[in-house]
Image 1 (cartoon, rainbow, N blue to C red):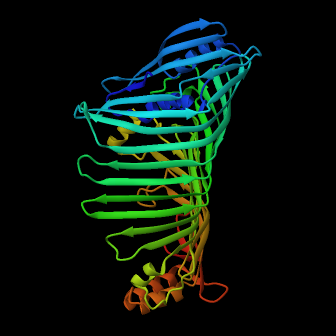
Image 2 (image 1 turned 180 degrees about the vertical axis):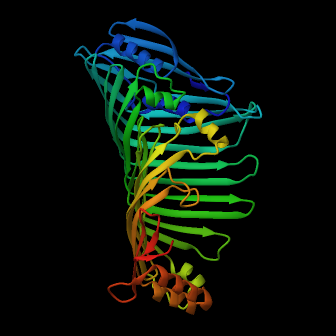
Image 3 (image 1 turned 180 degrees about the horizontal axis):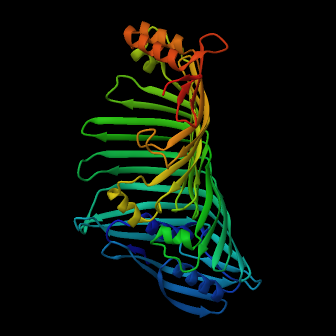
Length: 517
């Protein structure tokens, strides 16, 4: 059995990893390949696909009846800013004509993936990741312009089996992940911009990690499972794109938009180094992670539901528990330099957060504070003008020597603010625009124009409890009340304060109509 060999020296940048991950990902899931209705057309389109990512492709082919065999498939790509290159060698593939306009693709059940690299000190590293599959089937249908892959596998496993440093074996440990009952489809439309649509699902996902740092002796272990894993996404791949330059890829038309979903899961994780120990046991009700990217924006989002976690450490005499109904985030940012303002956004949610009484008792043994679940929820949107290409490494490096700001803030909207904790609740919303031609009125910041509305319920009651607990001295509490009196006024309801902070066209700052600046 031959190996899949990956050779590289130095650390590959993110764009290099995109190319190599896309390549290996095909052989694991079949989700990033292209084909036609005959074996020869399938093979020719594969070569075009990998060449488009920047690989030099070489192989030995042999036609026998209705089957085209491809042996010693080698794909090589120079690694920028590094001494060496990335090479992937696939020992054997077969493309069989089924006689009905479809093509079946087969590969060995075991494929070792060999990775070689070197650090900045010249020390060489090598690792072997073994990919194993059972019941793997892949069928290609469609025509030359639009191809559909249908694939499935009973099990698929990735396992780290070997690590060496300067030719000497390293007792690194083990790492593995296994997916069961995997199935999916991938549709590719060819052209100058290849359009890709992918979907896949799997049953149970198992993972295990047991690694030891050879220098410190520190050990980390992790193991767990998810009930299911799924992915759905789309993308466009420009022909002959430079996969080592993400900014150039985006300019050429590269884009992606996909979401992973995981089912309910559970797991444990532990650390042990020099006598210090740390262990977590957790469960969750499932979640998702999404990423999208094009020439205009980069977006990440994620959420996990129904989280429960127990933490044990030798620094505490007791275990502590946390729980939350939801933990989520979203971030959208422009990536390309432009003359016009572009949209950005950000949000964070931690809802119905609770912690064990053992933690509360550390600072509130008399239970003066209510144990109600806490929530933090904030949602922001706005517009900004980016003054450099965010994903261009050279421009990003030049920012270190820039005295000017890398972006201009044009507008900011607080769509939602909720902080609910210990019997008090702060809510708010607001909207501002910013004049970047006026950097004098607010000490070098662009002059704002707009208003922020806030409401605090239970604030004075919480302050009284903190004073009674001795966490805040009385004189500091008096100062806080004075500040609240300057910026807020009584609202409807008991222990309710409201505040409207405005900045008008004259540059005046007002709180509830009273001028502060």
